[in-house]
Length: 273
Image 1: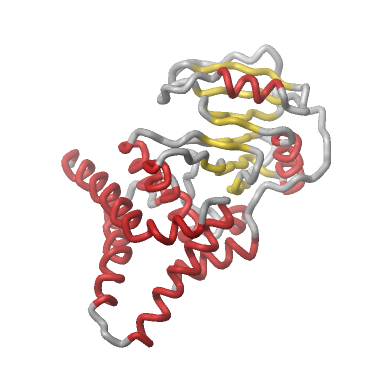
Image 2: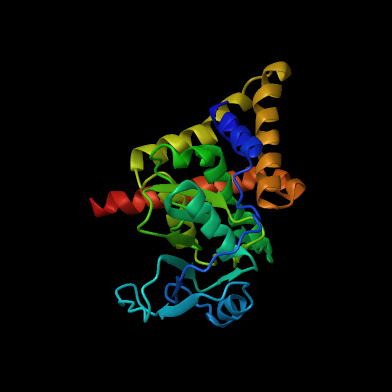
């Protein structure tokens, strides 16, 4: 019920970056993180050249500890992973949002580019977790431990604001599928602040709840929880522009894979103790 309520709030509040039709002249430093992925930044650079924004400077970081020295003092910094593609309007719309609400940070969750069956099994899981755990519209008002920027991030920062916001990128940014299973588990573990107890409780509720309900023979009692699961997957699919029917069919297998990834990360942390 709680997870359904969060999903419903997100669905009704529509936490997407919109098109605002405003144009700005602030200098924006674009930092491309060209590490931790086998993708070349060439396609991203091409999509940057097609932007309707001219006041930019682009630098490429090839290592996490590499220092970036911009030639011009930038008022805003946009950080992108190398395997993300951006569409026209992204920078102007992010700047409008930053200025309107006095934000110090605006993080976008890119839309997934799903191609293979493996992508349809794994990549929707992080969107499912994010949208049924965190009411995104409230992130601007309270400090929520939301970390969608672990992988495939689009983040604009500025020293002019203090508050942070997390939105879906809508049609303005797309990410390639995340092939590394370890990074997939790390991303989902990050939504729970890398807390072993929180992850274990989440897995128990995720798997144990439906299993316990499956032992109940009263169909009237089963209709409510399974109806909520059905509606949740439909809403998340529409918010992320994914195939709702396919997500419903694959839901049981996806939840087992999600639990497996989280349990693996818990096991890794326990071994480090």
